[in-house]
Structure formats: structure tokens, C-alpha cells
Length: 409
Ligand code: D9A
Image (cartoon, rainbow, N blue to C red; front, side, top):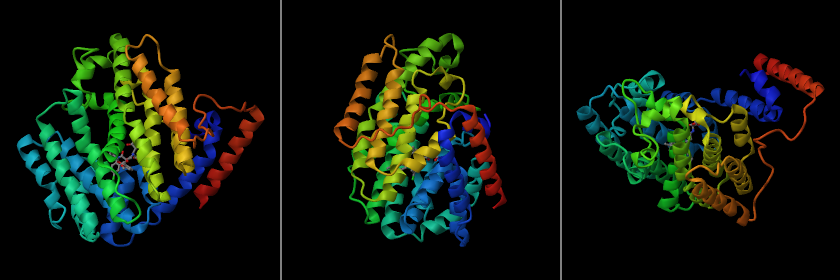
């Protein structure tokens, strides 16, 4: 669907979409002049769209540390993901990656497209890393070391049990949460969060990605990548890839719902982590991805489209989350609304219906008992207002004028 179609269907997204577009145009013009920082921020914008925007709100010192941390992790990921590197070469690189970030002339060519550029010009990232304060460097080094070792462990090991699943997600995402908490603490702006809560921040995001990306990962060439734990999918199919075939839709959706229910377990920890933050910019930086995650889970729940294509929150809704997340009330409001949407989709015949309902109600209870619930709402299901044709035409005119002005600038 084109931009205009999207706006006719959700005119309430328009304001946030325009604001987001202006903000992203603005940061494109603010790339630092030094080549290593210029490269790092340009790279960040290429590999993550909304993340690059939210990072900009952090103060300059913390922003630089988070930008480099993000790129180091992306580079490590690129090595892990590249299926053309034999394991006996890949494992030692993963295990020694934390040394290479200190070596200005180290590089290892792999990956494709933007990731290949990141790997080939990694010296820019090392140069920028060496300019960070010592406490930032130590936090990044420690996490890179532990993550590299964890990834190496899983190169020759499959995700069998739910325990393996939590362990794998800890290495690739939970540790990111721990690392960021250390960076926030090093900036002097936040207390050090408990490791278990930081870990949950990563697990909630990573499990959501693993659920959403089922089809993409299973269709990976030359070899599919499988992150759904056998302990869960074996209840519904004899092979994980069987879930994508139409004749297995019922079992596939039940398996999907089992996976979503598992991920929901981390939501309350995430609320607790966010509640303890003091700095507004850090709060927004942390809260936005979590709201996107619970929104994506609500969208994926009981949705067979996960096995057919990509299920993503519409861009306009993402724009509104970015624009309208300023306080814990907003977070409780979003978690409450998305868990209500999920709850409305529970089918009593689903084998996990009562467990899912139990988890959703626990999240809703946490939102209500905070006393801060803001029910402004995203109105996911349908627009409250009835838009008549005159209004639609006026909106279309307004959009044309706005975009004409924007593109002329
Ligand atoms: C994050 Cl430094 C991630 N991951 C994300 C993005 O958010 C987390 C990778 C590197 C860093 C940070 C994140 C943000 C704020 C606080 C956090 C945190 O913890 C306290 O991490 C736990 O997804 C990747 C992992 C899940 C593996 C950790 C958000 C992000 N979003 C994408 C959108 C998408 O659909 O992936 O990157 C984007 O903006 O492009």
C-alpha cells in the first residue's frame, strides 16, 4: 500500500509520520565531520532506521558509546550470520573479537551489502572506540567477549530445550541489555540495573524477532536458521519447516501462540526496568523498542500470516510510538492496550489458552496497579471517529501540500 492509501486508512498517523520524516531528514544533515564518527553514524542510519533516530536524543557522550557498541555488536553478528565461513575459522574470530576492537588496523571481510562495508571499514569503528572513555570501553569489551564466546558455543549446537533458547537469547540479546545498563551507569545518569531485569529487556526483544522472522529464517539460503526450540515445536510438528505448509496451519498457529506465550513472560520485568529509569532520553531510548515488541507480539498472536510473509506494525503506528512515548503512563497505556488486543484474539480451543490469558492478565494487572495507566490509546482495532468523504479529501489535500513543501526544502 502506498503512502496515500495508508493515510486514508489511518489519518490519525499523519501528524506523527510527518514529524518523523522531518526528524530523520534533520539527522541526515547532522553527520559529524571527522571521518570515523561520520562513518559510524552513517552506518548506524543504514542498518537501523528508527533506532538511529532514538539514539540522537541521548547526550553526545552516551550517544557515541551506544553508537559504537551497536556497530561492534552488528559486526559480531555479521560474522555469526555468514554461512559461507567454515566453523573452524568462524569460532576463533568470534572468541577473539573483543581484542580486535582495540586494533586500529584489524579487519575481516564477510557479510553482504551494508554489512560488508561495515566489516571492510571496521578500522573506523575501532578508531572511534579508542576515543571513548575507559569505563565505556571496558563495558563494551566485557560484553563483546561474553557474547562472542556464547555465539561460538552455539555454532555447533542447536536450540533444543527452552533452556537452550533462553541461553542463546541471553548471549545475543540479554547481554546487550546488561551492556547498555553498564553504559547508562557509566554516564552517571542512572543507577546500575539488576542483571536479571537487563537480561529480560533483551530477551523480550529477541524472542519477538525470532517469532516474527520465522519464515525469513527458515527460507535462509544455503541453510535455514532455526531458533524456535524443539521442546516447543515438537508438540506441533515433526519438523520445524513443516509449519510453513498450508495443510499444517492449525498446528502452526498453535505453535506460534505457544511461542508468543513464552515471550510474554518477560514483559513484567521490562516494565520494572523502565520504571526505575530517571533520565528522559534514556527512558525513551529503552521504552520505544519494548512497546514495538509487545505490539508485534499482539499482531503475530494467532496470525497465520507469520508463516506466509512478514508481519510488522504499520509505519504510522511506529511513528506514533516514537512521537508519543514520554512517560511511564504512556508505557503502561501501550502495554495495556496491546495486551488487551492480544487477549481479544485468544481462542478457547487453543491448547495454551488459559496460560496465555493468565500471562496477559498479569501484564494488565501490573499496568493497572501502578496507578499511572494512561488510556489515551493507539486505537489499534479501528478509528474511533467516522471519517466522512469531505474530511478524507481535506486530509489528502493537506498531505499533498505538506509533501510539496517538504520536498521543496
Ligand atoms: C538494542 Cl545497543 C539492540 N537490539 C534492538 C534494538 O534495541 C535494543 C541492539 C543493540 C543495542 C540495543 C535496546 C534498546 C534500548 C535498551 C535495551 C536494548 O536494553 C536495555 O537492548 C536490549 O532490537 C537488538 C537485540 C534485540 C538483539 C538486543 C531496537 C532495534 N530495532 C530495529 C527494529 C527491528 O525491527 O529490529 O534495533 C530498528 O530500529 O531498526
